[in-house]
Image 1 (cartoon, rainbow, N blue to C red):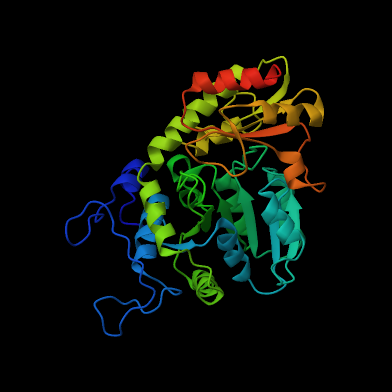
Image 2 (cartoon, one colour):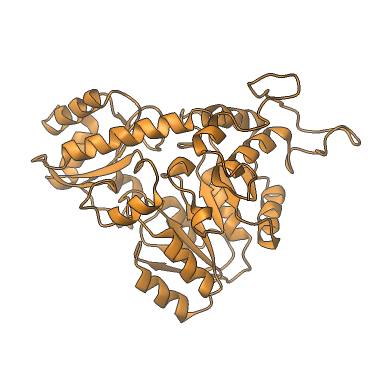
Length: 377
């Protein structure tokens, strides 16, 4: 684990020990070099394997998650892909029913080319997971919590205990929670994954992904090899922008979480809303677990189900002025998206669901924008 584990996440994101470079600058420099001379001052040789820009971002990520090591990738999907490519062909993997739709469809469609045996269980259902683990040897359990876009919660500590008892490793997609709110490795997970494009960067101008491991072991070495030989690294400028964004991570997550909580409460009894899905609400099915494993807030993501079905949801999404109708999440700006047409006919998501990525704007303005859209614009 990181030697900086005694420091709080906000400090590690904004100003980790050793953050100043050799000339005393408090802002990390951008180094665009792709190749390094043999026998030079560094141990770097070629950027596809490693480089100083990645090392800076990875050091910060490992400290934030209190992990042994971290790897930066060109996207969240590339990071996830490396985890599965690190498994032996034919390995059995258990995934949740509700998760990032592109990764779910890619796995179930055999996109990895590894002939993985994919089984799925309901999110947060410990009994179903226990049964699935008992039915056949399993190499990896993959969970996402809070899970996009229903924001269901899975007990990480319980899942880790069940997985390890069955000889499986546990990987957690913690993109929505961020290390500001949840540190999965401290709850027993083996690997934590982030789509760094989202909250870690926070400005909608970087495509990147990241993995952090609890142990620098043989399984981690295979993942590192997959990144190197697969050419899945991020660019140097993207790595620099990611570090810049991470310096304000705590402030952005805290503000977005507070805004999301306020909107969830205000919208809960709205006549035109069937349901508000947000783990911070007391009636949310996973609220008690979220209280236990999310520290300082419940995240900036929530979903609402609109009365009137598909057509009404499409109308509301198109009527907002401050909420941009766009995909992705985790930026300073608020976004709204009608999920059913995005995920397609195989999606388990209700067709009346709107996903909201709540930004850092004034919450009164955001609330007024949603009220106006619900009223017909």
